[in-house]
Amino acid sequence: MEASKCPKCGEEPFFVEHIEKWYCYECNTYVDGTEEDHEHAEETVEHIEDQVASEIAPAVIDSEQMDEVPVREAFKDYSDDYEDELAADLAEISEVEPKEAMLSAIPKGVPDVVAPAAEPKTDMTIRMCTNCGQPLKWIEKYQRHYCYGCKKYAPKEDKPKEEAKPAPEMKACPDCGGELKYVEKYSEWYCYSCKKYPLRRKKAVEQPKPAAKPSTKPSGAGMCPKCGKPLKWIEKYERHYCVACKEYAPKEKKTCPACGDDMKFIPEYNEWYCYKCKKYSLRPSKPVFLL
Image (cartoon, rainbow, N blue to C red):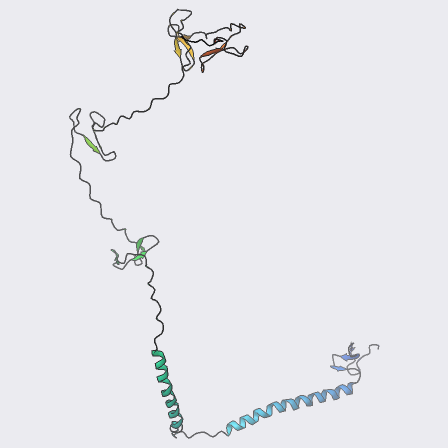
Protein backbone atom coordinates (compact mmCIF):
# COMPACT_ATOMS: atom_id res chain seq x y z
CA MET A 1 0.00 0.00 0.00
CA GLU A 2 1.37 3.33 -0.96
CA ALA A 3 1.73 6.09 1.60
CA SER A 4 -1.02 8.74 1.49
CA LYS A 5 -1.72 11.84 3.45
CA CYS A 6 -3.88 11.92 6.55
CA PRO A 7 -7.40 13.13 5.56
CA LYS A 8 -7.66 15.14 8.81
CA CYS A 9 -4.32 17.01 9.14
CA GLY A 10 -2.71 16.36 5.78
CA GLU A 11 0.54 14.91 7.35
CA GLU A 12 2.18 11.74 6.09
CA PRO A 13 1.19 8.76 8.26
CA PHE A 14 3.56 5.99 9.52
CA PHE A 15 3.03 2.37 8.42
CA VAL A 16 2.90 -0.16 11.29
CA GLU A 17 4.02 -3.50 9.87
CA HIS A 18 2.80 -5.95 12.54
CA ILE A 19 -0.81 -4.71 12.20
CA GLU A 20 -0.45 -3.48 8.59
CA LYS A 21 -2.03 -0.10 9.21
CA TRP A 22 -1.11 3.56 8.72
CA TYR A 23 -0.82 5.68 11.86
CA CYS A 24 -0.82 9.50 12.10
CA TYR A 25 1.19 10.89 15.01
CA GLU A 26 -0.41 14.33 14.64
CA CYS A 27 -3.97 13.05 15.02
CA ASN A 28 -2.91 10.03 17.17
CA THR A 29 -5.25 7.84 15.13
CA TYR A 30 -5.03 5.21 12.41
CA VAL A 31 -5.76 6.51 8.92
CA ASP A 32 -7.81 3.41 7.91
CA GLY A 33 -10.87 2.52 9.98
CA THR A 34 -11.02 5.65 12.09
CA GLU A 35 -14.62 4.92 13.16
CA GLU A 36 -13.67 1.50 14.52
CA ASP A 37 -10.80 3.00 16.47
CA HIS A 38 -13.03 5.66 17.95
CA GLU A 39 -15.56 3.06 19.12
CA HIS A 40 -12.76 0.93 20.60
CA ALA A 41 -11.42 3.93 22.50
CA GLU A 42 -14.85 4.70 23.98
CA GLU A 43 -15.23 1.09 25.14
CA THR A 44 -11.81 1.23 26.81
CA VAL A 45 -12.71 4.41 28.71
CA GLU A 46 -15.98 2.91 29.95
CA HIS A 47 -14.15 -0.24 31.16
CA ILE A 48 -11.60 1.81 33.10
CA GLU A 49 -14.32 3.92 34.73
CA ASP A 50 -16.20 0.80 35.90
CA GLN A 51 -12.97 -0.68 37.37
CA VAL A 52 -12.12 2.52 39.27
CA ALA A 53 -15.67 2.79 40.59
CA SER A 54 -15.53 -0.80 41.91
CA GLU A 55 -12.25 -0.06 43.80
CA ILE A 56 -13.48 3.21 45.33
CA ALA A 57 -16.85 1.85 46.56
CA PRO A 58 -15.47 -0.39 49.42
CA ALA A 59 -13.33 2.46 50.70
CA VAL A 60 -16.39 4.74 50.91
CA ILE A 61 -18.34 2.06 52.76
CA ASP A 62 -15.49 1.55 55.29
CA SER A 63 -15.35 5.27 56.02
CA GLU A 64 -19.10 5.35 56.59
CA GLN A 65 -18.90 2.38 58.99
CA MET A 66 -16.13 4.08 60.95
CA ASP A 67 -18.34 7.10 61.45
CA GLU A 68 -21.07 4.85 62.90
CA VAL A 69 -18.78 3.26 65.62
CA PRO A 70 -20.26 4.15 69.03
CA VAL A 71 -18.01 6.18 71.33
CA ARG A 72 -17.73 5.22 75.01
CA GLU A 73 -18.88 7.65 77.57
CA ALA A 74 -16.03 9.72 78.90
CA PHE A 75 -16.65 9.19 82.64
CA LYS A 76 -17.88 5.61 82.73
CA ASP A 77 -15.77 3.09 84.74
CA TYR A 78 -15.02 -0.10 82.80
CA SER A 79 -12.47 -1.58 85.27
CA ASP A 80 -14.87 -4.24 86.60
CA ASP A 81 -15.73 -5.74 83.22
CA TYR A 82 -12.72 -8.18 83.11
CA GLU A 83 -12.32 -9.06 86.82
CA ASP A 84 -13.43 -12.67 86.29
CA GLU A 85 -10.94 -13.26 83.46
CA LEU A 86 -8.07 -11.73 85.47
CA ALA A 87 -8.86 -13.91 88.48
CA ALA A 88 -8.76 -17.06 86.33
CA ASP A 89 -5.39 -16.08 84.85
CA LEU A 90 -3.91 -15.45 88.31
CA ALA A 91 -5.07 -18.88 89.48
CA GLU A 92 -3.32 -20.60 86.56
CA ILE A 93 -0.09 -18.68 87.19
CA SER A 94 -0.10 -19.61 90.90
CA GLU A 95 -0.34 -23.31 89.96
CA VAL A 96 2.55 -23.15 87.49
CA GLU A 97 5.02 -21.16 89.65
CA PRO A 98 5.50 -23.80 92.43
CA LYS A 99 6.31 -26.45 89.80
CA GLU A 100 8.95 -24.24 88.25
CA ALA A 101 10.42 -23.47 91.69
CA MET A 102 10.70 -27.21 92.44
CA LEU A 103 12.41 -27.88 89.13
CA SER A 104 14.89 -25.07 89.70
CA ALA A 105 15.68 -26.44 93.19
CA ILE A 106 16.92 -29.77 91.75
CA PRO A 107 20.75 -29.70 91.99
CA LYS A 108 22.49 -29.93 88.69
CA GLY A 109 26.00 -31.09 87.94
CA VAL A 110 28.42 -28.59 89.41
CA PRO A 111 31.04 -27.64 86.79
CA ASP A 112 34.70 -27.96 87.71
CA VAL A 113 36.20 -24.73 88.87
CA VAL A 114 39.13 -23.80 86.62
CA ALA A 115 41.80 -21.70 88.26
CA PRO A 116 42.51 -18.51 86.32
CA ALA A 117 45.84 -18.26 84.56
CA ALA A 118 48.51 -16.49 86.51
CA GLU A 119 48.86 -12.94 85.30
CA PRO A 120 52.32 -11.42 84.92
CA LYS A 121 53.38 -9.43 87.90
CA THR A 122 53.38 -5.71 87.30
CA ASP A 123 54.35 -2.75 89.34
CA MET A 124 51.04 -1.94 91.10
CA THR A 125 52.39 0.94 93.16
CA ILE A 126 51.01 4.20 91.81
CA ARG A 127 53.61 6.87 91.41
CA MET A 128 52.77 10.55 91.39
CA CYS A 129 54.31 13.14 89.07
CA THR A 130 56.86 15.29 90.87
CA ASN A 131 55.94 18.32 88.73
CA CYS A 132 52.11 18.42 88.62
CA GLY A 133 51.16 15.79 91.23
CA GLN A 134 48.97 13.72 88.89
CA PRO A 135 49.21 9.90 88.87
CA LEU A 136 51.60 8.46 86.35
CA LYS A 137 50.71 5.84 83.72
CA TRP A 138 52.96 2.78 83.41
CA ILE A 139 53.95 2.16 79.75
CA GLU A 140 54.74 -1.53 79.44
CA LYS A 141 56.41 -1.20 76.04
CA TYR A 142 59.10 1.20 77.25
CA GLN A 143 59.09 0.12 80.93
CA ARG A 144 58.66 3.71 82.07
CA HIS A 145 56.09 5.97 83.75
CA TYR A 146 54.35 8.67 81.68
CA CYS A 147 52.55 11.84 82.84
CA TYR A 148 49.62 12.91 80.65
CA GLY A 149 49.48 16.27 82.42
CA CYS A 150 53.07 17.22 81.63
CA LYS A 151 53.04 15.11 78.42
CA LYS A 152 56.43 13.62 79.08
CA TYR A 153 58.05 10.62 80.71
CA ALA A 154 58.89 10.74 84.38
CA PRO A 155 62.56 10.37 85.34
CA LYS A 156 63.71 6.83 85.90
CA GLU A 157 63.91 5.55 89.43
CA ASP A 158 67.38 5.45 90.87
CA LYS A 159 68.38 1.90 91.63
CA PRO A 160 69.87 1.33 95.06
CA LYS A 161 73.60 1.55 94.82
CA GLU A 162 75.57 -1.49 95.78
CA GLU A 163 77.70 -1.10 98.81
CA ALA A 164 81.34 -0.65 97.93
CA LYS A 165 83.53 -3.54 98.92
CA PRO A 166 85.98 -2.70 101.67
CA ALA A 167 89.49 -2.11 100.39
CA PRO A 168 91.94 -4.86 101.28
CA GLU A 169 94.67 -4.22 103.79
CA MET A 170 97.83 -2.57 102.53
CA LYS A 171 100.78 -4.81 101.86
CA ALA A 172 104.48 -4.16 101.43
CA CYS A 173 106.56 -5.31 98.50
CA PRO A 174 108.74 -8.27 99.50
CA ASP A 175 111.51 -7.07 97.14
CA CYS A 176 111.84 -3.31 97.76
CA GLY A 177 109.65 -2.85 100.84
CA GLY A 178 107.48 -0.20 99.13
CA GLU A 179 103.72 0.03 99.25
CA LEU A 180 101.72 -2.15 96.90
CA LYS A 181 98.53 -1.05 95.09
CA TYR A 182 95.63 -3.42 94.71
CA VAL A 183 94.40 -3.74 91.11
CA GLU A 184 90.74 -4.84 91.10
CA LYS A 185 90.79 -5.78 87.42
CA TYR A 186 93.37 -8.50 88.01
CA SER A 187 92.71 -8.97 91.76
CA GLU A 188 96.42 -8.66 92.45
CA TRP A 189 98.92 -6.36 94.15
CA TYR A 190 101.22 -4.23 91.98
CA CYS A 191 104.49 -2.53 92.88
CA TYR A 192 105.19 0.69 90.93
CA SER A 193 108.82 0.72 92.09
CA CYS A 194 109.59 -2.76 90.83
CA LYS A 195 106.99 -2.43 88.03
CA LYS A 196 105.70 -5.92 88.53
CA TYR A 197 103.33 -8.07 90.53
CA PRO A 198 105.66 -9.37 93.23
CA LEU A 199 103.08 -11.63 94.89
CA ARG A 200 102.15 -13.37 91.68
CA ARG A 201 103.10 -17.00 91.76
CA LYS A 202 104.16 -18.32 88.46
CA LYS A 203 103.46 -21.95 88.01
CA ALA A 204 106.26 -23.54 86.12
CA VAL A 205 104.58 -25.68 83.54
CA GLU A 206 106.92 -28.10 81.93
CA GLN A 207 106.19 -28.00 78.26
CA PRO A 208 107.07 -31.11 76.29
CA LYS A 209 110.11 -30.54 74.20
CA PRO A 210 109.55 -30.82 70.49
CA ALA A 211 110.85 -33.95 68.83
CA ALA A 212 114.32 -33.49 67.46
CA LYS A 213 114.30 -33.13 63.72
CA PRO A 214 116.74 -35.23 61.78
CA SER A 215 119.88 -33.22 61.24
CA THR A 216 120.63 -32.34 57.67
CA LYS A 217 124.24 -31.54 58.53
CA PRO A 218 126.58 -33.73 56.53
CA SER A 219 128.92 -35.93 58.52
CA GLY A 220 132.29 -34.44 59.31
CA ALA A 221 133.16 -30.78 59.96
CA GLY A 222 134.37 -29.11 56.79
CA MET A 223 137.19 -26.56 56.54
CA CYS A 224 137.12 -23.36 54.54
CA PRO A 225 139.07 -23.85 51.30
CA LYS A 226 140.28 -20.21 51.42
CA CYS A 227 141.32 -19.53 55.01
CA GLY A 228 141.38 -23.08 56.34
CA LYS A 229 139.17 -22.26 59.32
CA PRO A 230 136.29 -24.52 60.35
CA LEU A 231 132.96 -23.86 58.69
CA LYS A 232 129.62 -23.31 60.48
CA TRP A 233 126.61 -25.32 59.40
CA ILE A 234 123.48 -23.18 58.73
CA GLU A 235 120.42 -25.38 59.23
CA LYS A 236 118.04 -22.91 57.53
CA TYR A 237 119.90 -22.93 54.22
CA GLU A 238 121.53 -26.34 54.69
CA ARG A 239 124.96 -24.94 53.82
CA HIS A 240 128.35 -24.31 55.46
CA TYR A 241 129.27 -20.72 56.30
CA CYS A 242 132.69 -19.24 56.95
CA VAL A 243 132.56 -16.55 59.65
CA ALA A 244 136.07 -15.28 58.80
CA CYS A 245 135.43 -14.93 55.07
CA LYS A 246 131.76 -13.94 55.67
CA GLU A 247 130.52 -16.09 52.85
CA TYR A 248 129.11 -19.49 52.21
CA ALA A 249 131.48 -22.27 51.34
CA PRO A 250 130.92 -23.99 48.00
CA LYS A 251 128.60 -26.92 48.16
CA GLU A 252 130.28 -30.24 48.70
CA LYS A 253 130.33 -32.34 45.60
CA LYS A 254 130.89 -36.01 45.31
CA THR A 255 131.21 -38.10 42.21
CA CYS A 256 129.71 -41.47 41.71
CA PRO A 257 132.42 -44.14 41.86
CA ALA A 258 130.50 -46.19 39.29
CA CYS A 259 129.71 -43.64 36.53
CA GLY A 260 131.66 -40.53 37.60
CA ASP A 261 128.64 -38.15 37.59
CA ASP A 262 127.90 -35.72 40.37
CA MET A 263 125.83 -37.07 43.23
CA LYS A 264 123.13 -35.28 45.30
CA PHE A 265 123.03 -35.29 49.06
CA ILE A 266 119.70 -36.48 50.51
CA PRO A 267 119.32 -34.98 54.02
CA GLU A 268 116.37 -37.25 54.86
CA TYR A 269 118.59 -40.33 54.67
CA ASN A 270 121.91 -38.54 55.18
CA GLU A 271 123.34 -40.16 52.08
CA TRP A 272 124.52 -39.33 48.56
CA TYR A 273 122.38 -40.43 45.62
CA CYS A 274 123.29 -40.92 41.96
CA TYR A 275 120.41 -40.17 39.58
CA LYS A 276 122.20 -41.83 36.66
CA CYS A 277 122.75 -45.12 38.44
CA LYS A 278 119.48 -44.59 40.42
CA LYS A 279 121.02 -45.81 43.64
CA TYR A 280 123.04 -44.77 46.62
CA SER A 281 126.45 -45.52 45.19
CA LEU A 282 128.37 -44.90 48.43
CA ARG A 283 126.20 -47.35 50.34
CA PRO A 284 127.98 -50.66 50.85
CA SER A 285 126.60 -53.29 48.49
CA LYS A 286 127.00 -56.13 50.97
CA PRO A 287 125.92 -55.95 54.60
CA VAL A 288 128.76 -55.78 57.06
CA PHE A 289 128.35 -58.03 60.05
CA LEU A 290 129.77 -56.67 63.24
CA LEU A 291 131.45 -59.30 65.40
